[in-house]
Image 1 (cartoon, rainbow, N blue to C red):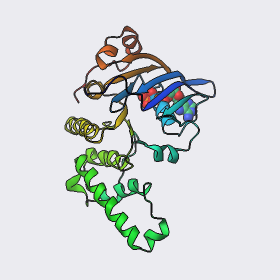
Image 2 (image 1 turned 45 degrees about the horizontal axis):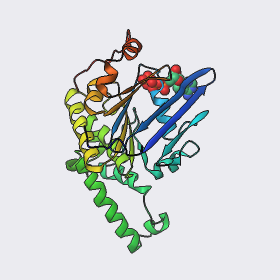
Image 3 (image 1 turned 90 degrees about the vertical axis):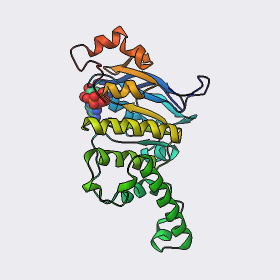
Image 4 (image 1 turned 135 degrees about the vertical axis):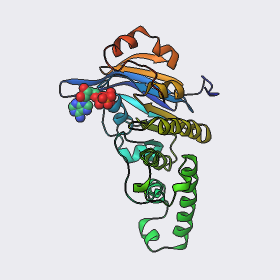
Length: 267
Ligand SMILES: Nc1ncnc2c1ncn2[C@@H]1O[C@H](COP(=O)(O)OP(=O)(O)OP(=O)(O)O)[C@@H](O)[C@H]1O
C-alpha cells in the first residue's frame, strides 16, 4: 500500500508483553512490530485485549513483563506524558470533546510542545507571543489536513459527531507524533462520516509520514487502511499478516466464529 522498505527498522517494537488483572491474563506474550509509515491494525473479538494493549503502548498500564521500544527507547516504565513527549499520541474510543472551539482544542495539543513557560505566556512576553502564533498556524494546518479547516473557530459543540471525533484525531496530531494510536476512530459514525475518516487517515499518513496503530471493529476500514494486522484472542496473538492473509487464516475464522466475524462492513 505504500513504498516502505522491509529492511527499515521498526518504529515500535512490542515484545512478549504480558498483563494480568488479578487472575485474568489480559495479554499473554504479545509481540508485534510496526514498520515506519505503516498502518498496523490490532483486531480481535470483544475482550481479546486490544484496549489493554493500547493502554500499555500509551503508558496507562504497566505490563508484568515484556518490553515496548520506540526507536530504541524503552517505554514500559515511563509515565503517559513522557511517552507522548517521545512521539506516541493517542485518541480514545469514547472521548468526544464538547468544550471550546476547534482551535482551543488543538492548541491544548500544542501545549505539550510549548517552549515558553506558563509565566512567559501569561505575561504575553514577545517570544511567547511569537511561539503562540506559530503554534496557532500549525494547528490551523492540521485542522485543514483533518477536514476541519472550515470549522477552526467554531465551537466544537456545534459540529457533527463525525467532525467532533476528528477534533480528537487532530488534537493528537498536534503533538507531532511519530506514532499515532487510533482507538476505534469510526465508532458511532454513520457511513458518510466513516468514509470521510478513512480518507483523512489515509491522507495524514501520506502527508505526515506517520506510523499508525489502529484498533477497530469495522473490518471494512481495517481491510482498506491496514498494511499489517495482528489478531488477538483471549490476550494471545493468534495471527499476523496482511489483511488478506489474516482474513483467510483458519485460526482467525475460528476465533470470530459465533461472535462478530471479520466481515467487511461498509466503511
Ligand atoms: N482494569 C481491568 N481490571 C480487570 N480486568 C480488566 C481490566 N481491563 C481489562 N480487563 C479484562 O481484560 C480483558 C481484555 O480487555 P480489553 O478491554 O483489553 O479487550 P478489548 O479487546 O479491547 O475488548 P473490546 O473490543 O470489547 O473493547 C477482558 O477480559 C477485560 O474484562
